[in-house]
Each structure stands twice: as structure tokens, then as C-alpha cells.
Image 1 (tube, rainbow, N blue to C red):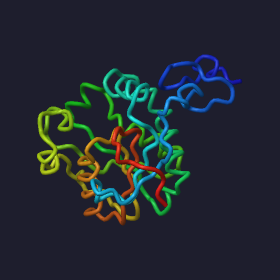
Image 2: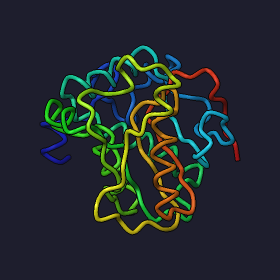
Image 3: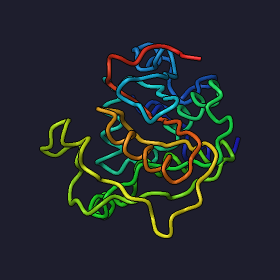
Image 4: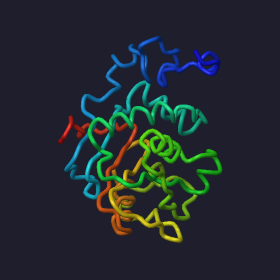
Amino acid sequence: MKISALLFPDKCPFCGRILSKGESVLCDACKQTGILRSGYTQEDLFFLPEILHLYCPLQYIAGAKESLLRYKFHGDNWLADPYAQLLHQAILQNRGYDHCKWITAVPVSKHRYRVRGYNQSALIAKKISALSGIPYVETMARTGQKGDAQTGKMNRVERHQTKRFVLRHPVPEINGGVILIDDILTTGSTLNECASLLLHAGADFVNAGVVASGRRDLGGVCA
């Protein structure tokens, strides 16, 4: 056994228990709580018209919700590793990497980056890039909003109408399929706006991967 494994043993990202032999990513107890989705992928979603396929391994409930809040707002960035493993498995098992040339992530504002110290979606995306062998590229930037529009006072219509993202300059060369990574799916407006930019920049299609969602209209696997 490696010394690093003794000093830093794998822990369940939800309950924090050290994983036993035979357990992978999550402990067996957390797997029984309904956190894992029965189906990984979804297509033809009316609220995601710019997305070809969506991959979402977790329900945004209980331990998963608490874990993601720690990751996003309290500096528990070690959680990017298990999140990336879960999402990578979901994409791989459903052939979501086929014909994809790039992996990118939803950007955060400069203010959020300074406060948080990292882009939570990009951190996961870079680890997925390492697992899949598909290059990660920074394609977009967030426009000059101090806060996060998703958690601000705008309603759903206003979020859809607001241009919150722009392509980086110089515009990166984008072709083939792109996998767009975010942490949590709520309304879908963020993924749609980012995917639209990528499609206009030359992407053949955009698949999206999110760690978790609380939406009830996400069903099982779609081929």
C-alpha cells in the first residue's frame, strides 16, 4: 500500500467515512440513500434546447446537497476528485465522449473567483480531462456581474434574457463535439447560454455534464 493512501485514505464525499475495501467513490451506506440516479443521461429536454445529451449522476438531496455546498462555498475542494470520478463514469458508460474533442466548464465571475479561490466547475472539468484524455480548454468568461446571477434576485425569464457569458479573446479554435461541465443544474439557463456560445464558435454539438440536479423532470437513460 502506498504511503499516500495511509496518510490520505479515500473518504466518502457525503458522509466522510473512510472507504472500506471494495467500496468505490461512495460508501455502501450512502449508495442506499437514493443519492445516485437510476439513469445517467437524458436527451431531448425541452428546457435544454442547446444541449444534445445531459449526464447527471446524482440527486441534489441530503448528503449530496450538503457536500456540494461545502465544496462550493466552504473550500472543500478535495471533493472535486470524487465528483469527477462519478461524472466521468456516467459519461463513459453512456458513450458521451464519442466524437468530443474538448472539455470546458462554465466560468465564474472574477469576484466569485477571488472570494472562493477556484472555479468549482473548472476544477471538476480538469480532472475529467485527466481521466478521459480529452483536452480541457478555457473557452468563456463571465461578464462583469459582482455576484452570481443564479442566486441573485433575477427571475427565470430575466436569467434567460441576460447575456452573462462571452467567448474569451482571442476566441479559441473550437470544432468537433464539446463537453460542458457545471456543478449543479437548476433552471438550465446557464448551460443553454454557454452551449449557444460554443455552437456559434464552431462546436458540432455540446454534451453537458453536471454533478447533481434536483429537477424532477430528469428521467432514466436515453439512448
